[in-house]
Length: 54
Image (cartoon, rainbow, N blue to C red; front, side):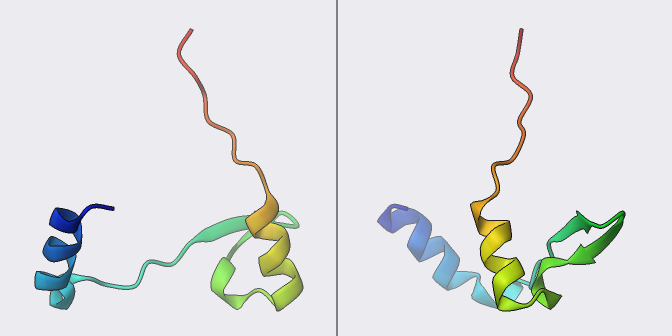
């Protein structure tokens, strides 16, 4: 991030909100925030699929 972006984030800190990230675990969706420490580490190591252009 450059200085311009940092300045913008600092000025607008009051507008930011917490973002909950959900993932599918054992057939249902759960927030990553509620995972135990082992499951959080496993989630960070996952590779995410991104569809490229043909």
